[in-house]
Image 1 (cartoon, rainbow, N blue to C red):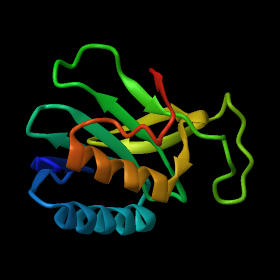
Image 2 (image 1 turned 180 degrees about the vertical axis):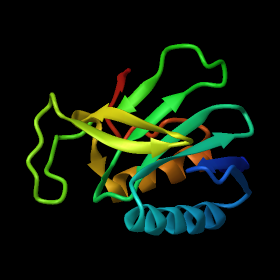
Image 3 (image 1 turned 30 degrees about the vertical axis):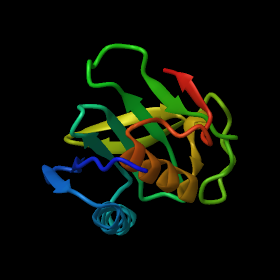
Image 4 (image 1 turned 135 degrees about the horizontal axis):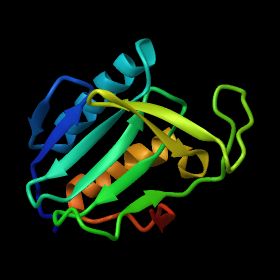
Amino acid sequence: MTEKFGADVLYADNGAIHVDTIEQLDALLNRCHLEAQKTEPFLVEIMLSTGDALTIGLGRDLSLLSYVSSSGEPPYFVSVGDSVPDDDVVLGDDDVVVFYFCGTYTELPCFTLIPMELAREGARYFFQHASLPSFINWIEG
């Protein structure tokens, strides 16, 4: 049986919105993704009631995930992808991708990019199980 956890979802400059169900999370992430496609790609932080947080990049064909535990102390983890092209641009492992988050632009290595649907599935898993999904490759970052 899956235990249920609520989460505060922080995005752009809009503050946090509390969600209690996977359906609420999906609806909010869908809305954020559409907004990010119209404006600029941004990061969304999903903070569970435990204090653990997963950040997802929205507004691009590819995404990334980043995890910080409730202590705020290392180890931190980021997703690892295949450095596949985004918007028909071939990216190397040394290239960076930029996302906006709460007043600042954040550069992240392109090797952290994963398909959007995989990232969304990972966010749903994190919300439902309060742990990192094993179907995503992670490195300490």
